[in-house]
Image 1 (cartoon, rainbow, N blue to C red):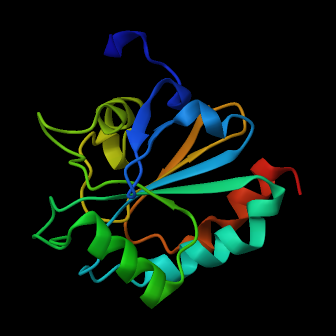
Image 2 (cartoon, rainbow, N blue to C red; image 1 turned 90 degrees about the vertical axis):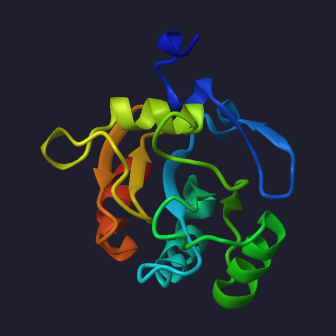
Length: 165
């Protein structure tokens, strides 16, 4: 089944509040998918992601956050705890999803596809750390993978170009 999936829209995921969402609901949007964690040195990137979302959501930007506890146990919380933390500390309004694995045998099908389709620096497949970002155009085509170190503000020019602003 996985081999027939060639677009980000071919996947579904459970939101942090328990609803199942087909990513096809985001057709026509510029999408950024990012794996997140609450106790990471990069956690303050939530603020930058929210800033981009606030600035460009009316133009068609959607950010999808996928918490993962696979890196140094930096996301130990439950979905409810993660949601509360992101909203209270960073005012996150973009869609957060239920905690998943992003690497290995137990990786969510979306991340199995992402790591095969959208390889990292020097062809790396695996997600190296929290806050790896994937950018897609309005047609669901993969555009670029950004390292955890890439600050969200550094992606703004690429988002603007994809939004046609």
